[in-house]
Image 1 (cartoon, one colour):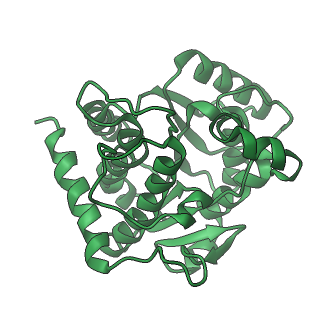
Image 2 (cartoon, rainbow, N blue to C red; image 1 turned 60 degrees about the horizontal axis):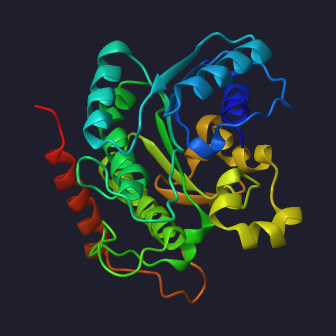
Amino acid sequence: MSLYRNSAWFLKGLTEFTRSAFLSASKSFVEKDLEASLAGRGTIHMVCRNKDKAEEARAELVKETGNKEVFVHILDLSETKKVWEFAEGFKRKYKTLNVLINNAGAILSEREVNTEGLEKSFATNVLGVYILTKSLIPLLEKSPDPRVITVSSGGMLVQKLRTGNLQSERGRFDGTMVYAQHKRQQVVMTEQLAKTHTNIHFAVMHPGWVDTPAVANAMPDFHRSMKESLRAPEQGADTVVWLSVSEAAVKNPSGRFYQDRKMVSAHLPLAWTRCSALEEQKLVSLLEDMAKTFQPH
C-alpha cells in the first residue's frame, strides 16, 4: 500500500472527527498509487525515512484531498537516540495528538547493526516503536479519546515470545522469522501498555496479506503463489481506519488483537505460542531499560 493511499484512508476516516493523527510509515509503503480521491479535515503527521518520497506523497495527497493539514517529519526509527529526540521535540511543538499509528517496519535479509550497536530490524520494529509510543503517551493523555494502533502481522501467530535473544545474536539469522518475532513482541507490548495506561485505547491488528512490495521482496515464493488472493491496499487499511475513528472500536477492551474490524485471538487454536505473564512483563522491562540507555539527558 502506498504512503499516499495509507494517509488518504486515514484522512477519509478523520473527515467527520477533525482529529490529529500521527502515522509512522514504512519504506515499502512509499510508492505511487493514485486511485483514491478522498476528502478529509483531520491533521496528519507522516513520519518517514525518505524525504523526497514523503514530500511527493504529501503533495499528491494534498492535491487529491484538498487538505493542507498534512505534515512530513523525517525520522529513521532504527536510530534510537534520534527517536527520543524527535518525540521530545514533537511534544514541545504540538499540543494535541489523538491517534498514534505505528506502521513502520523493516524486514532484513541479513543481520545488520546500527551505529548504536543495535540490530537494525529490532531497533525499528520493537525498540523504536516502544520509545515513540512511550514518549508520546503524555501528549496523547492530554487529548480527547486518545488511541494507539500498531500494525502487526499474521506471521506472529507462529511465534512464541522470546526475550533471550532480542538482538538476534545467536543462531542463523532468518529475516522473515525475526520479523514475525518482532510482530509477536508488538502484540505483547500493546497488551502490557494497555494495562498501565488505562485512559488510552490500545489496539494491535493484522491487515491481512496485502499485495505490497514488502511481501513480494521478503517472501517471493509466497507472493507468486498467492498473488491472486492477496488483498488490495484499501482492504488492508480498513481496520486501521476503523480503530482510529470508530466509536464502536473503543467500546471493546483495550490492548486486544484485531482483524477485519473484529477482536480475534492472538494465538491459533491449540497453539504452543502462549507464554507466562512474567515473560510478557520481562519484555517490557527489558525494553524500558534499553530505552533509558539511549534517552537524552
